[in-house]
Length: 136
Image (tube, rainbow, N blue to C red; front, top):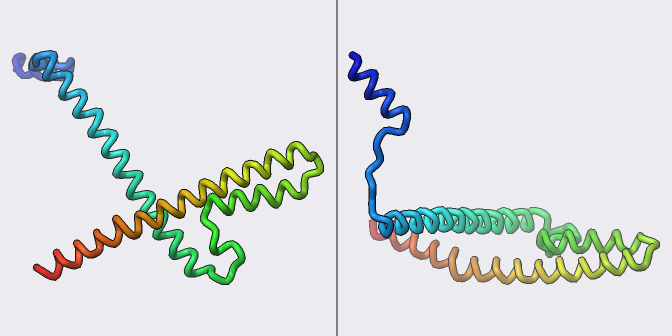
């Protein structure tokens, strides 16, 4: 009984650790760091693809609205531009108009990225899934 208690206490305090060489420890640390970064990157890609699909569905639903052709960045830029036209301070309005250009540029890059994703990733993944399912 005493031996079991000592064993449990030993494990709770950290127990023993196998000692590896410094090179091996460094490789494991590097692997774990890259693994975390790759998992974050994959999560970001899933979010972007999901966001693009949701945006596409929203655009199909709201085609009759004025802003339906704009993505989320361009909508922010448009809102800033509308606000800048209502401000009496010219220097503040100029800053907001510059911000609109930045958001429009980000919107164009987002649209380009979305198009590339749909053409290069989503389309090929869909074809791969269809071919794989058809074979089984």
